Length: 258
Ligand code: NAP
Figure 1 (cartoon, rainbow, N blue to C red):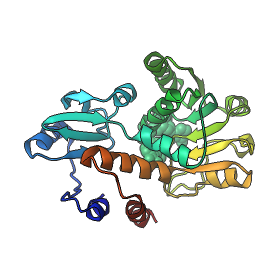
Figure 2 (cartoon, protein in one colour):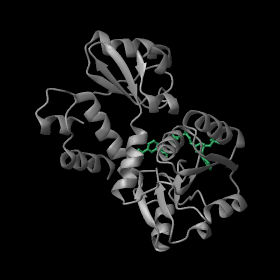
Figure 3 (cartoon, protein in one colour):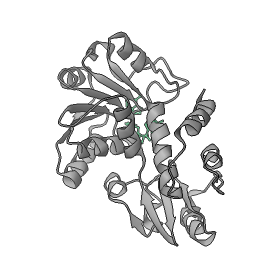
């Protein structure tokens, strides 16, 4: 962020604060008290900040998580830029999901953001989790909030094979394959077909085992790094009200990740 502010000549500074769970409310109040322009929020407080905000934007409300807070003249408004980042990453890769079918693996916070983004594109979503409870409540809630088509299955090879066989997009929204356990993959390699676009939310390593296998099979691949980049860009623009300098911010992100 600081590289972006510098490139735009903005008198802003991006700082990290470690906050204890008992102090979440006080930390949010400090944004207002100190006249901060805004803040980013990360796990495990993306849902916990919600009761302390003055307003929540529609997508953040539906997802149930806020990762960006904007101070609008003392009124604190919560946004979720993960869903914007996911859509921008798909768009950048030339993947149009409108009226297509997507299989999403995992039913945590990132999955909620991606499912919401896909449903808003009228994508038919099937969400998998190893514990049926989480995926089914995600599907139920998203169906109610968006009125779009989303179903859920328990994660096993048979269900995965069946649902992926006619899907257009596969999304890994679990930490499987993330450094330092890079050799793991969330789905058996046999389910990948060249017609499938494969999107891995894991951003370290850039080329996960899943994406490497997908590439070998001729699939289009979408990097978690790209979603991370665009969710940051959306946050920059929401907080500063200025266009983000893409080139400089990409360079800065790659320096941190590589
Ligand atoms: P989360 O809330 O903890 O959810 C993780 C989900 O993955 C849960 O459904 C969990 O199931 C499932 N899971 C975990 N380990 C698994 C395994 N070994 N096999 C099958 N399922 C497993 O985490 P999150 O915040 O959604 O993040 C998920 C991943 O997305 C992380 O790697 C994170 O770094 C990445 N992410 C990327 C971006 C980006 O911008 N690229 C943004 C956000 C997150 P259980 O509930 O059963 O544990």
